[in-house]
Image (cartoon, rainbow, N blue to C red; front, side, top):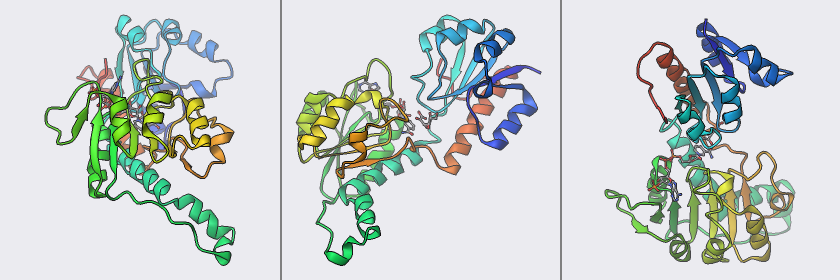
Length: 310
Ligand code: NAP
Ligand code: 8YV
């Protein structure tokens, strides 16, 4: 059977399916990972995720590697130029997670605007007995700027419209067939919106795109939402601006150094946090895992990859 290195645990049934088709080596369980790689120089298949990815160093240790199947749509943790240079194919899991991520985006926005998490704590602590909860804001009538009107961004836009919000967007290019107003300049968009939702890929081209200037443009009544990658936002500056009130609020699913989240963020009531849960529903994780397996089997059987990246 062909060797397959798996970098992290997958759903149990998926592991069963992988084990029926490959000699699976559990990288995450190996006490000596270098030894595992060195002992399998003929490995052609690797399955990884958006967190562990695959570095050029690992590729160098697996000179026969032909394919990396990624559990996740974001492939910023995989060294794509290195894979391309070595002729290694890379697949990801696009589209099947759009609805789950978009739902969480609106969930986080509702939670932040209506202070749902804080209000829940208010009751649990018995505070309601001593007085009502302060008034909050609603989404209706507000403007949301989507940074990255891609597969997920479009689903967020549709849901925001259902909440009677105005939708505008920024990206590298104007989308010809989209009905929303396009801003070529991110700062100009940030000045005009109440909500800025980041859902762009990670990597060098988006790192620090949302810096102090953009957050200042968003302002004390504005809120920042991030479901893309933590690297998109200058996190230290965001913390300071949230503390000083220069930025109104933030709803965050991704962070610069996951799973570490700055202590200061964890105590702010104008912040809602979720531990990278965008795609984390049973249905969606199954669909993603299924794509991981089907891509591996496609390559093994010499048929076209289902969702190739390179
Ligand atoms: P996609 O369809 O490729 O959309 C990405 C969008 O980002 C495109 O519209 C692209 O627009 C824009 N973009 C790319 N680089 C940019 C740049 N430098 N400046 C401005 N805009 C840029 O990808 P997707 O499937 O929607 O996924 C987007 C990202 O969401 C993933 O890569 C991943 O990082 C993240 N994600 C997070 C979770 C989670 O659990 N939180 C789950 C899934 C995905 P243009 O091409 O027009 O520039
Ligand atoms: C996953 C994601 O949680 O698809 C992505 O890009 O960020 C999430 O769906 C992650 O990739 C799992 O490793």
